Image (tube, rainbow, N blue to C red; front, side, top):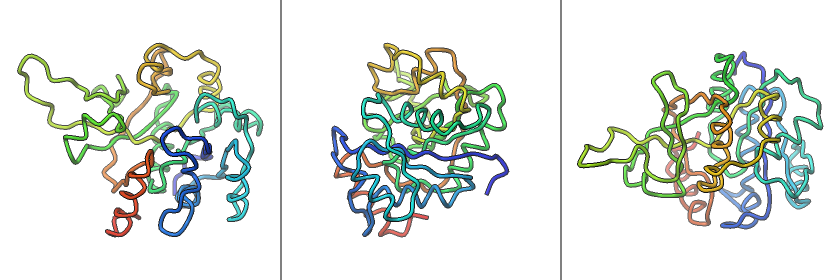
Length: 252
């Protein structure tokens, strides 16, 4: 539990390019969206909302007792979907909302707490997020795994699908590459501002919406987590990896 009051929104759309319908794909006998919802409810969140644009997801969510809100289909990103919920429900502009991705069924509730606390501790920050050291350094070259670099005080410098930092002119490789954990805490006012801003060139190139925030000078705080984190689900192969992760007893 945490003394940083916050809410959680889980954006979940059906029409994923690489894995259509993944929110309803079965994982360990339950739809993936149920896993994400249960993890969010295990955190200290005051309220957990599923935001979707598909009646099938809303109906499944209602079936296990979740609060589900139908949002517009034309949103560019999960961030924009979360912003619609914040605006429609009239949440306090100074409040904190955590975006727990609908394809992160193994995120620990304590990590959700941690990102909310991180933002609460840094009053000048607009967003907060988490990272973890890559176990397999070869994953640094995997474009499906987002990497992050940050300054000595934990402010994000850049996010990329490419290996960062790059190794140039015979220099030694860095001691660690940092995998970005796709969970964000926002101040509601900053989230609404971000959703109104146009996409930037970096965001369009990398297909990473957090680069829009950096482009427009918004501070993102990053904290390292040592928790056991399973894979996010981008492809059917990731779903199989998540099944193995659970079977090995590494999911908490």
